[in-house]
Length: 467
Image (cartoon, rainbow, N blue to C red; front, side, top):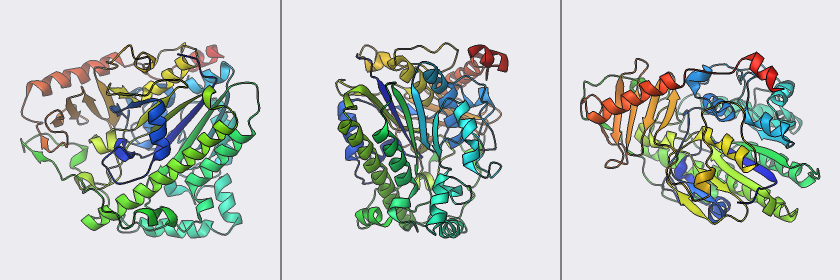
């Protein structure tokens, strides 16, 4: 396998694994992602390390699990700038590093009202060039380069009012954005990243992180993309599961959602809107690929595409994420290496495996302990099994999946969700509480996992020694 010179890492926010054209979530058009699949490796069994933004992104950067970082949810946190991470490692090895879009490495709650003032913090993580946007829900509240552009063209207050209206009552409302297409966040991210790549003329290799804010809610797809899907019938959402043992322990899923119920028509509208957002992002990715080809960088560039977590899209009568059902847990992962033969892998993979994979493909090896495992043996075709188990964590709950059986325990390590995906792929029958051998076996695996992963962020002294 030839070592690629450059690295383009593309990430979306809240994209399900089945959101590509090959999937079953909704009808959509993703020709550019499909093309990457035809030139690289598509992983069909990739799981997020946490089904919510902040811990998933922190885990991706550090290679650690949420419990090792003390980041269990989106509560205010700041990724320690002294903690070791693979982006700064790449910078040390000579890569010109950049990020365009969302990071969520620090709170988006207004404690840093102007994101431009956080650029030194993002640079401390290893990114030299920074143009950051916030998550969609706070995009008009926080100052940023993008918000300044909205202000200049008279759209910032309109976005602020629109977002307030969308989350006031029925959160399943889906209608076009108040922004013109050229000011829409995902277009902004694609455009700024494209301009950077178009102008790039350094002799050093680049690592460019392009982090789209969509297809995350709100359901505000721009009008041209809404019109593409407005007359298309979307697949129906998955029904709620049935408890085989009604006296099972309770957990986070059993808490009623903090939004009003929605209808089947709402789900259809959400899925149409979501499909439009996915297609818009796909076109932005196509634009970036075209630039690489025009600059004769295509055969020198490694491309990785993934998401931080999925989206329920009405499945199990839920929206958003924050649970361990397949719709929120499974994420797309495509790795395109120049000259590689296309393949599909069903190996169990975790989000945190991406960092060490990128580093090894760059011809390096991380010099500090972390939990990610390089996928290079799978990419080389000399290994089928990657992980025997994958773990995911949220709100002090833990999931383990062995490829067939999935177990979720609550904060007290009591099993409350258990599914046999080999026989029940739609997760319709919950077997937790029946004291089955699989429940006992997987619970012990979680206990062992917690014992084996007690160490967390490395000390400031270790980080200083790194320098």
